[in-house]
Length: 275
Image 1 (tube, rainbow, N blue to C red):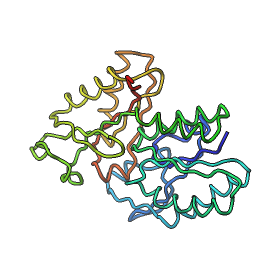
Image 2 (image 1 turned 180 degrees about the vertical axis):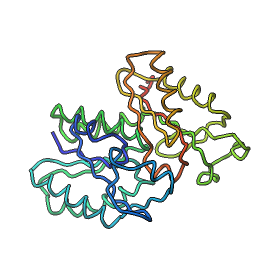
Image 3 (image 1 turned 90 degrees about the horizontal axis):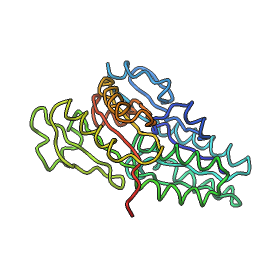
Image 4 (image 1 turned 30 degrees about the horizontal axis):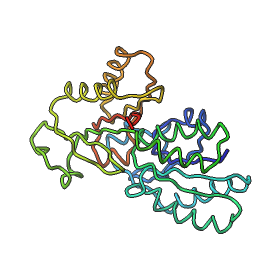
């Protein structure tokens, strides 16, 4: 068994992370009014919605990550950090070079980073299932092979409430008032699938995706901003369809809310490939 780390942008609460044996590195942040460590349990989302402002403190992140990774390595165990998205997430640009530095100090142990190519609870589902596997005592190589296979079948759909940051990606009619793009995360990138109008249609679309595609007992992730009623309605529809579904709901982390808008709604689930 290895020590597995994840960023707090996996949007899982600390109780869930502890249950599956995952260590979390919380993002140090600063706003116009205060500083802190981001975690879904403690972050004041209402305060954030009133004055959306969020900046990751990269210097503090490197210091915190160095302390936590070093502490784990001193136990003599192998260590893995799961980054959400190597291209877009700040944790990769900070922790990847740090891992290279620490590998020289601990040459007899494996210290690795793996790219999950996802966001929020899409990333969180990969973290969750990895923790379960790791707790069974599997080698780090086995765990990494699992992640690289499993992540390909985690589907994430995002319907943002603002197009401001993704206009260059919109090839459809995303500029029409009341119409919102349907985005899918494909290999870590955002792909525009279609456009959709109206809350009822949005909830129906996301609910049907889950109903038709979820595999086995891997949890379903439902994410939102201040529009918790939308997330609750998706949860209700899923429970009516199948009361045995495992559902994890969460606020989208403020990094993504800044990008997609504070009334974004999203889902993630595991779909096993037909191959």
